[in-house]
Length: 371
Image 1 (cartoon, rainbow, N blue to C red):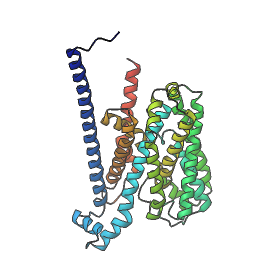
Image 2: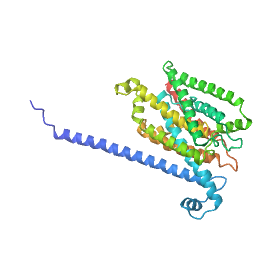
Image 3: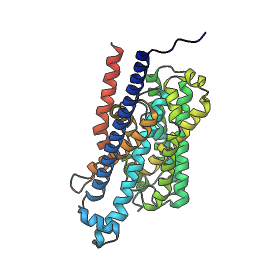
């Protein structure tokens, strides 16, 4: 028995519905494209500000001449190529890395307050840094904590800090199998961070005063101590790490819906969690090793990206966090250097915009629990 032929009205409705869906998809794509374009423009403008603003103001024409090989004062070339370009590249890469790392950790732990700084992952990286620096030793007159280590020392620093970060993350992840409360898990991370910091303090107790002073300055957080030789190691590691996280978008989307759903999709949970821990540890550990523990970027950027792009799709959020993180990290660094000849501690500037975001999250969670 043949099925009844569709009526003309039904066909018209189907065509209209299909057209409406296609129109919404086109509109959504155009909106996302415009938002990504705006963020890219902001990144470019902030990078321009990072290269031109500071104790020595470099006019755009001198900047262009120096970059293109034209005539520019020697002091401009020195400031630009020895200080500002490596600092700008470092800030962009570290901001992108901490942004995607914070997003991964919030999805993995299902906690909107999770980030490398809060959960003690940065402290784990600091322990690795302290061990390597104390074992290798640095010049007491070195400008930064890592400047005297050399290529092999830089690689060792990244490995040690990544191992420290991964160790802390695995401890918290193991505890998470028994702790159902996300707040308890968060407090556990804070306590582990304190324990690791105590171990670092014990290690530094026997160090020279110069090394202790360098470690304290490193703890303030800064992109200024990263040199070109450091960047030749740090840059590829962070770029590869960020690119690797982009491949995890589908798995992170599945984790949002719960472990059981992810398993029904054929996902190997152990493999996925291992990949997330590995990429987060390398990104957070490497960034912390050379720039110190950078606070608030990892926790604030994912929330800003979710609000700006109005989605929880990691295929959009991961590149969005990378771009927003890059622009905010460099903007904070530029702002830290604006007041006169001095430079504000970077983490103090980060806290100025990161703390309101955290307060907003806490208030929203509290309101959600009471409704």
